[in-house]
Amino acid sequence: MLMAPRLTENLLLLANAYQDTTGMARATLSKKAHSDSVFFDRLAAGDSFTVRKYDEVVSWFRLNWPANTKWPVEVQSPTMVEAVRVQNASIRRTKENSRRRRKIKAAGTRGSRSL
Image 1 (cartoon, rainbow, N blue to C red):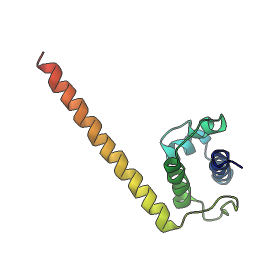
Image 2 (tube, rainbow, N blue to C red):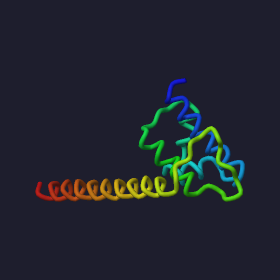
Image 3 (cartoon, rainbow, N blue to C red):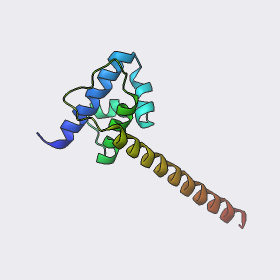
Image 4 (tube, rainbow, N blue to C red):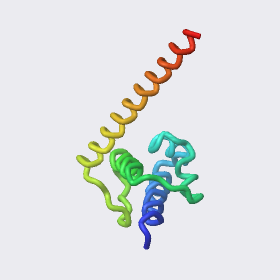
């Protein structure tokens, strides 16, 4: 089996198991796990994602998995240490990207004033 379909299947399996246990709507879960309310719908429709994004989403599930629910045996679970490390790196990248966007926006605003 190719890796992309297997990883997609893993993410959808985790999402479905989480939804079955919590009753959370798919759009809400998608927003919490990926900051994109249609992420899991797009996966189901065949969209792709990066390995980094896979690690981030699986780590989110690991850190937020309901205590009374078994982790699907088909999906390798990261350790808590690995999951925290991945989530912290993701948060740092998000903050760095936000700072860059603010700097670019500020530079563009200053440039338009000089006209």
